Amino acid sequence: MGQVKIYGLKSSLETKRESISRAIHDAVMSALEYPPEKKFHRFIALGNDDFVYPEDRSENYIIIEISMFEGRSTEAKKSLIRELYSNIEAQCKISAQDVEITIFETLKQNWGIRGLPGDELKLGYKVEV
Image (cartoon, rainbow, N blue to C red; front, top):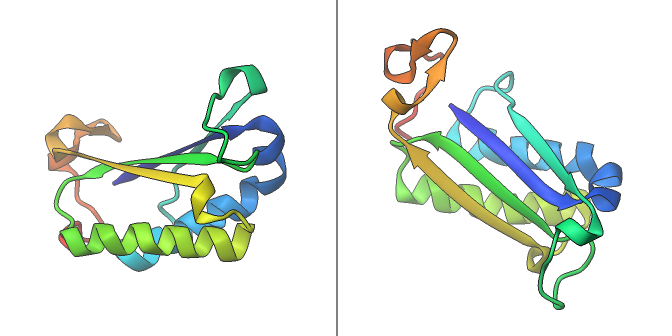
């Protein structure tokens, strides 16, 4: 299971939302062997006064937070990070300087999905990649 939050300036996210979503999902499917139909993205569009970032970032600056079940290998997570940077630069024209990524791993039993604790779910994909 994976949930993705994307934070950025409202003005930038309005024009890049679809391409960012596609770039992220392409990376997740490739690096984590994630099914195409499992796409959970939330865009948090902030006003200029609500999103403070360093001067060496542009108005395209985004923060990506990925919450997922624990179990992926270090190499799979590094591959995901590399693919995210590559896809976002190629598909969205946002430089790596303007992208920050954090992965949060959680025990399956700490999730509630479709009326069950996460460790009781029957998944259609593997987590141990």
